[in-house]
Image (tube, rainbow, N blue to C red; front, side, top):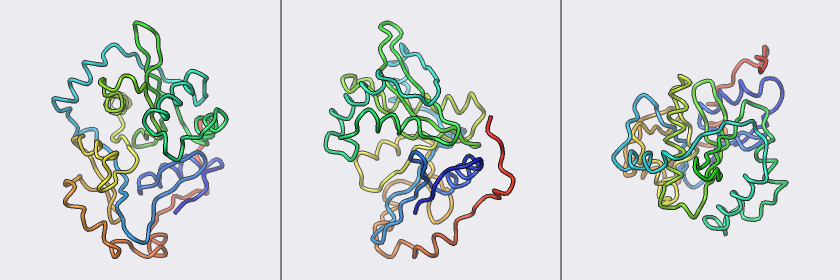
Amino acid sequence: MFTALQGDAAGKLNDSLSKQGFRRSQNVLYRPSCTDCAACLSARINVDNFTPNKTQRRTLRRNSNLVRRATSAWATEEQFDLFRRYLDSRHADGGMADMDVFEFAAMIEETPIRTRVIEYADKTTGDLVAVCLTDLLEDGTSMVYSFYAPERRADSLGTFVILDHIEIAREAGLPHVYLGYWVLGSAKMGYKSNFKGLEVFRAGAWEAFKGEEAYSSELHPLSTDPIAEQVASISLPDLSHPVKRS
């Protein structure tokens, strides 16, 4: 399912549908709706329920030499160079593998809502080592897309960026960090279940993550409601009086 995200009420619509499992891609909001299963579950971290485990504390210490920079949603050559290195190393056969600089700029800059680019640079060398395209929602931060220096695999930069976004949410008094989708059986998505306080959107409501085995039924073809029922269950905000964006 998807809908266009545009106009003065875009922020209000994004806030509402994000709470119902939707994700943003440029000017579109979408939520997977497949006929064969319901394995893609929107995931977020409840900040108040999160405490880092031993491995995550080690990751924070290992990356204490990084400095965070929050910038406007504007693409740079340095970001694109890092993005290409990341894709070539980690997702060379993925759907984004052929993205050029213009498509990258569109991914970063085509946003009708409050979006920031969060950069992480090495304090010693000044090198850009990680980037996250981040939306600011009324109830949290949404990590739209992140990428990092593939040669620093041992530093667990992907985990570090999530940990720092939890801190960003805490600093801003926001209760959630939206991570995208947790997909049952996907090794690439499995890392999300390592975060205490993880919640998933299932059967129209958010629930505390119960462990992978609790969601095996989502792989059954009968686990998916008819598309008409899914659409009818979506709650839309009152868009008659849009809030002006600052």
